[in-house]
Amino acid sequence: MHATSSPKNIVVGLSGGVDSSVTAYLLKEAGHHVHGVFMQNWEDDNNDEYCSIKEDSLDAMAVADIIGIDIDIVNFAAQYKDKVFAYFLQEYQAGRTPNPDVLCNAEIKFKCFLDYAIAQGADVIATGHYARKEVRGGIHYLLKGLDQNKDQSYFLYRLQPHQLERAIFPLGDLEKPEVRRLAAEARLPTAAKKDSTGICFIGERPFREFLQKYLPTNNGNMVTPEGKIVGEHVGLMFYTIGQRKGLGIGGAGEPWFVAGKNLAANELIVVQGHNHPLLFTDTLVMNDLSFTLPERPAEGRYSCKTRYRMADAPCSLKYLDNDTIELTFDEPQWAVTPGQSAVLYNGEICLGGGVIMRTDKPLIISK
Image 1 (cartoon, rainbow, N blue to C red):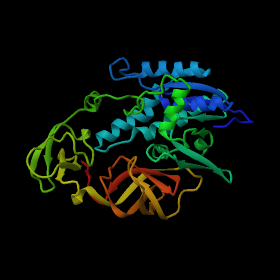
Image 2 (cartoon, helix red, strand yellow; image 1 turned 90 degrees about the horizontal axis):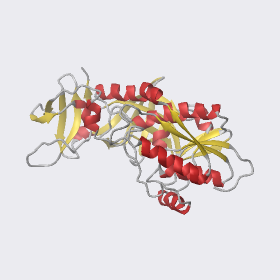
Image 3 (cartoon, helix red, strand yellow; image 1 turned 90 degrees about the vertical axis):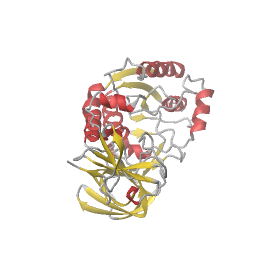
Image 4 (cartoon, rainbow, N blue to C red; image 1 turned 180 degrees about the vertical axis):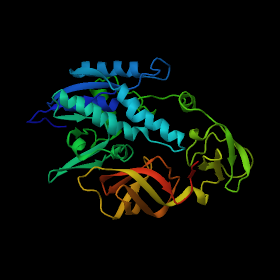
């Protein structure tokens, strides 16, 4: 990032990881007025062995000290519990598989944090996401990050135009190894720190044990589509469409996969073989729509991701009503999962998307 003739007041979300550390470093080097914020958004059990809040906050403060910027520790735990975690539990209880990272970005990082930063006099906020932004004719476009392996535009699809206008992504043109090299060069303590993969702001912990603290479990049968009992599940909420690991079904033949859930009968529907027809979807219906541009996309041809890091899948878009879209894929898609996000692209441009309600397969049979 080159020096700038018009320094801005930029507040950076410092998470204690290498990406946000390098984001703050690059902006400071470019001559901007940079201020760090560490967000503490989880308090229920932040003293246990899986919660890294203390370690992360110390790393964020050490980075701020080395770069030479001030840092605030800000608590959005109440908002997180109300806006993100309550939804997370509600979706699991309904048999779906939510994506908390998507909601976390929309409700916490680009709402609570953005409002806080603007109140502190920020022109824009910056995060360590691997995504890009371009302004064309006064319109702010969200683009894929150049590093195909790290592109995080999928998680940012719920950003509204007014949020995009006040956000920048300095790592969008960089690849991950370059980011680590810059961190090592700047002697940042996070240079070799491994990437976090846990639930947004909650951390890495045994998922089953964690969810059991908040939701009642109810064992039941694993059945084939024909109704044959082949095993026992430990609670429908612990399984997701396409899951192979942890089913514990013995016997010969191809591996077993989760293909659906019957909530009414408390049954987990399982099939044998990665290529079983029940695991493939031709169409999906999504609602809870959100778009990154002032005008929503017209009906027509686009590409779509139904999970992070999948190849773009060509599809046709049709509105069923004002808040419901049907996507029809050129090729059947594997393990499309209700509760996850379907994100639309026009080439490099992330247009937005919605939450998958259902597909042409009866994946979630409600009570």
